[in-house]
Length: 266
Image (cartoon, rainbow, N blue to C red; front, side, top):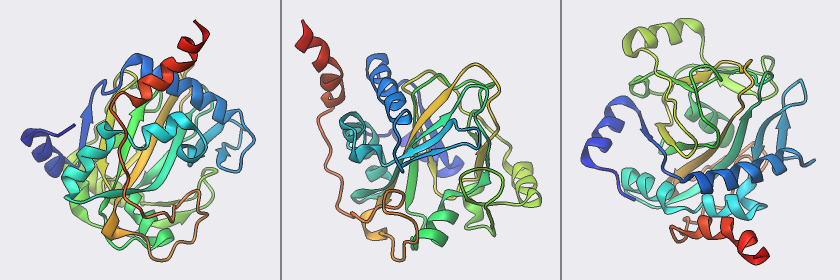
């Protein structure tokens, strides 16, 4: 799984890249079922909205076999190692659930701001990769990105502990307005199985979901091994301390696991 020269150039210029339907419907259906079972569990890694609806499930790759394979899948790992020019490790793994009718907002922010302030990450040499488990539409709270905002560097932010159940280092309206005037806003949408990757300093956020259509997305935060965190303050299931390089699995490993129960029953 290698990015083309045009894709690499687009990413460096715009700060993001979307690869549609990178995973098959069979693979995604399997992951979506596993995600629901995780949300239904009473685990400390599963955070919920004020309404009780699931908001995010951390570290699923450590206690679920399917997401363990996804976290080491070459379609996800290889492009990031290509861009960074070195091996990566898993800084964070989460399954975000923007539930139907009750999914709450994610305020405007940069991810690196949190990784730097809360985890002691030296440089923005980490990146989020998002895999759509549901169709992401313009109406069900898609992720909104401000193109080219990664060039603004690490922006001043305030620690928002009030707006939602998840604390974030958020940006003020004046800063967001200035950056949007320069780069606009895009909201990548697509069918389940698509993969979105974006720079750690790219400004982004999402609105609430008041539609009947849920929007589950898996996020892998891959960090360059040389950029390991120095002063973590958050629980280990949020900011991992295992800095070993990820060893990728076979490309068909997830598909074989998805088919295993059906084959065993036949």
